[in-house]
Length: 216
Picture 1 (cartoon, rainbow, N blue to C red):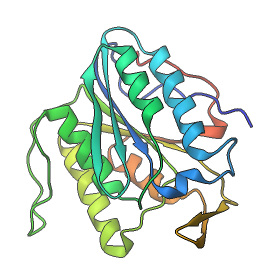
Picture 2 (cartoon, one colour; picture 1 turned 45 degrees about the vertical axis):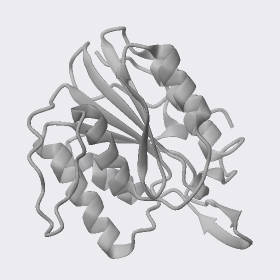
Picture 3 (tube, rainbow, N blue to C red; picture 1 turned 60 degrees about the vertical axis):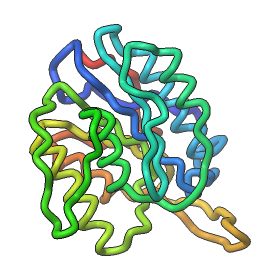
Picture 4 (cartoon, rainbow, N blue to C red; picture 1 turned 135 degrees about the horizontal axis):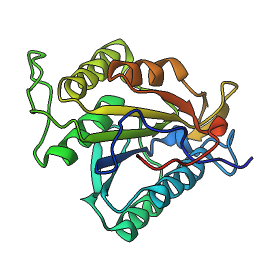
């Protein structure tokens, strides 16, 4: 199955700014319900997206499983961004909250965290920034994890940062083997849609995307 690029035009009308590609590298991304597997499909989608962006857009890459690691700081260096995408390998569980917080940290250049008492930090206005979250949408955080995801999305919303979610996987899903255990995993469109809608952005299943429009 060929994977097209990630979707229709992003809902931010500009030709310059910062884009963070937040790439899911959790173990479920090794599932082969997308050919050759979800991570490889996500990488192909990300590389196509990078090629489609104008020089005025800085691109950074964040890989996430249970935590998040900035693998390429936002810059105009396309080769660095593409190399960071290609280096990604699967490991660990999934924390979508970490993905969002790690991406916001990459945007602002300082750590962004939810307070121990649940307080949300004011990170200022970053309306020229967009997070493109490429994931199967599954989150191992349970009910409390879902609360953290939406809290992180609220921080982004308050800062004017859009989160464009691109789903990788199928509703039927597939079974992967992790540490000797069989785990069924499927695309969670509801979770990804909720994240995108929280920041007035959109969700696109990658397999249904038809083009790699630049941010214009």
